[in-house]
Image 1 (cartoon, rainbow, N blue to C red):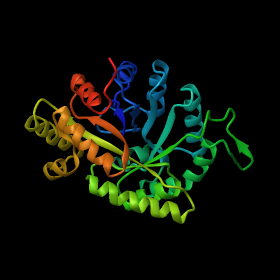
Image 2 (image 1 turned 90 degrees about the vertical axis):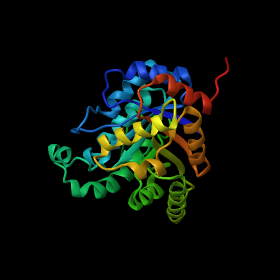
Image 3 (image 1 turned 60 degrees about the horizontal axis):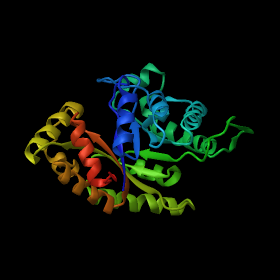
Image 4 (image 1 turned 45 degrees about the horizontal axis):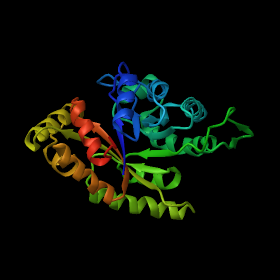
Length: 286
């Protein structure tokens, strides 16, 4: 299993945290984005450019880029540029968004068109990210290598989108069983399209603490703040929580279900516990 770290929403400390993540053994770092949101959130391309400048090994994933808010060629240009800046370490995560309709209105995009716009943009973006031409024009300079595309989301539409155009499907807030079932549909669609199997990923909100009870309280409280709803049942079914050993064991269940690449999205700011979790899954040679 490859383990990634979701960076915080604000970009202020991205360089320092990205450098720390590389030092303690994470395989990748990821950043999300919103134009307007209810909490501090940066832009994934900009945050990851800052991370690229201070790291040399970790891969860099946008988790996720809200593709319907961009013209397809512009999103591809930014992705290709970041791939070159990072020496071929960038991977593009794509989502449709919609949680905050105000950001769609702010850029003149109907929120109801987000799925259609994403599906229409993906073939163009994929062609550019593989060094190809659209209407006789290619990105110049080209990407260092074909840039992988992750498709975020847990809906059937997201699964089918991943089967048609993704290299990795990345759901969130779901059980290991749902990951396994979803990947079967993703791969069925990929076969229908004449494509190879799609890799499994997971954005894993996780609460690591000194005890399971403390971690559960943290997970329920933080996720209720984020999603504005009762999270008791969802936490027990879909959120790894507990000590570093507990969370590592749960993440291995997701890996067994097919999520070979997991983004640890910490609900606790305690870096020592995050480093301990990473060490459980990727012991370092000392």
